[in-house]
Image (cartoon, rainbow, N blue to C red; front, side, top):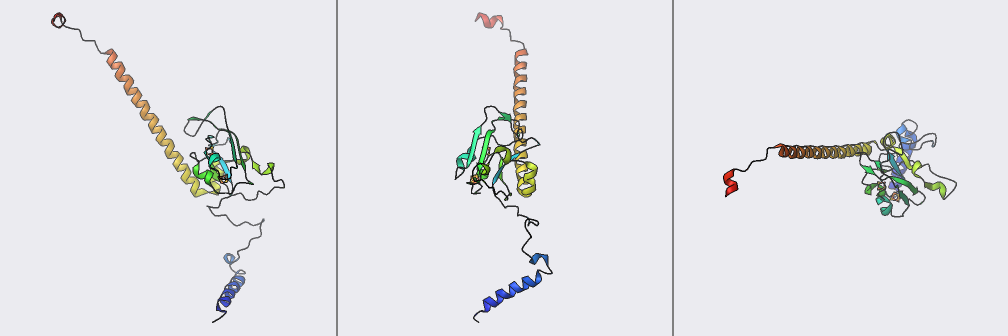
Length: 211
Ligand code: SF4
Ligand code: SF4
């Protein structure tokens, strides 16, 4: 029958309209900004940098390798590598970014910087209330503004952050096991060398020297 689809659609609308007075699930609008719908785990907006512990400088995971800067399609990441080094999460001395800026007026939220980072140092944020009056400087986010704690990452992406923590813990355990094995091998080699040096030197017999 012609128009049946329209009638069915109107019936759904009517059912939801009437039902919204009785069932909260049918009410799909919220009184923003007083009320906010929870964002899904995989919602993403602009990138931010993660730091471990309480110190955003000392705990920053980024080692200024600049891979993200090279791979960013619109080239909106600007990094200057430090001259000195600081220990990373496994205690290995690494460079860090003296400057790390992202121009979020250019960023297209593609997440490529996150995908290419070998150090789990950059992740996607969920903060979307970022409008500013000024187009230029105010939308160029500096390292200090971009740095957020691992606890914050757990709050906005709990499942993903737990998986990342596990990967880092596994990598640290492997590095620690390798370090221990290398130390044991070096100790064994040193002990063998010391034993060889302490062993008495064989004295040649008169027969063997005369022939
Ligand atoms: S999300 Fe994409 S566009 Fe934005 S900084 Fe990362 S790589 Fe660049
Ligand atoms: S965020 Fe990751 S990829 Fe980018 S410079 Fe830092 S360590 Fe390298």
